[in-house]
Image 1 (spheres, one colour):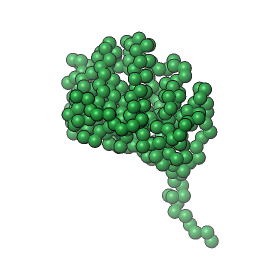
Image 2 (cartoon, helix red, strand yellow):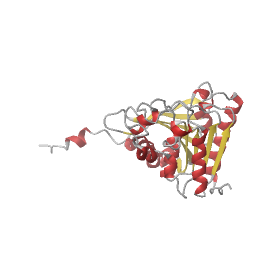
Image 3 (tube, helix red, strand yellow):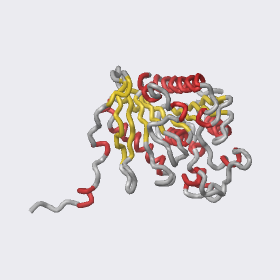
Image 4 (cartoon, one colour):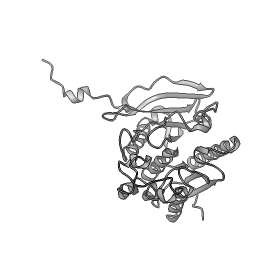
Length: 303
């Protein structure tokens, strides 16, 4: 008689690193897209997927950008870089691929599915998946830059500060959950409210769980080994105050790290209020920063 298998092992889904890759689509000339590639299985929630954008004919192993979407940790999609980019054709991801990068745009568990640190665990798992399949995909994951906007910038910063990468691009993200109430406009934020985005992320109001809020804050993870950071934040941001970007920049400078902090005059959250040409300019500056981070040795810290 055949030996009875371990039923749990028999029924378990296959490891994502061993699954066949989907066929490539061509969403824009010169660009290949592997859409909806599973990178992690989590009990009780949907499979977590990423989209991998690559140039059609790479000259060699590609540097990687790990892109993490915003949405207050409770919404958003890996296909979207924010409202100012939805009309772009080709898409911002296709443009980054044409610039010579592989772009992995990620799902992660939202706060309605799991509380922090689940989100950091997920984006860390995506990086591990990319490392495991780097040879197969033609990736040079030793040259990886994290990039995110809003809540995604928070996770990109955490990923960059807890895992060896080459750099981080953070657009208008929260960096210290414990000081967010103090920085916000009067009456705009209640630290005792259990329904704020941040409370839903950590599973408790900020005022009741300051240690948990601090542990979920990028500023708490800054060390002397931090990679270079580009931080762009609107001066008129009414959702995540400019002081949040200032705090992370100051923490990085205090440890001798390289940080390029750029307040963006007149910009509200999501680049609302900016002319199209300014949005294009900040996008191009971010791609240039990623190119610098993946081209050679780290640049020295700014004074």
